[in-house]
Image (tube, rainbow over all chains, first blue to last red):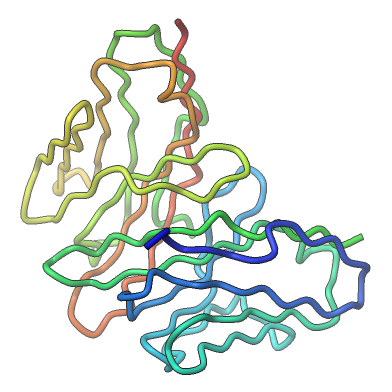
Length: 115
Length: 115
């Protein structure tokens, strides 16, 4: 297994457009997380899936954001009507929470720039 | 409300010496702590973790110390190497069964190891 992958790595879009990002977690991990990181800050939690169920959403996740994880495998994060404030690095992480280990393994991220 | 704080934005040490990165937290529900390393344009890479039932965990050159009464943890890197130069993030979570396990990150400390 090659770890968590994310596509695209970079996305430049104009304000008002919709964008969609994809995350492929480590195959045996049932937990999947999305985070957002802006310059000079640590990653901030956005949403969490256990298998296909979305069990928690941060208040950072406005109505313009939606995430899915069909069949409990890959996940997508869609941002509708993008705003300049959405410019950030979007990170996906997965974990198994087995054996007393709670580490999350991150993908390389998708850098979004809204012009 | 910053529940996890890394008060030193940057640290510079000489190769071969010890690097000590500090982290404070405020939420008593946190019972599992992690350190991540991040290079530019990459996702965070897991380094080492510690459960609240321990006060020390060691892995090669990396040791994490936890002081629960002070709500403080530190990462020691000995000996420091130029390849250790990166941004280091402290993260915390509540691993209680039923919780999502989302990570709360500090702002990060940029470590520079000089040859």
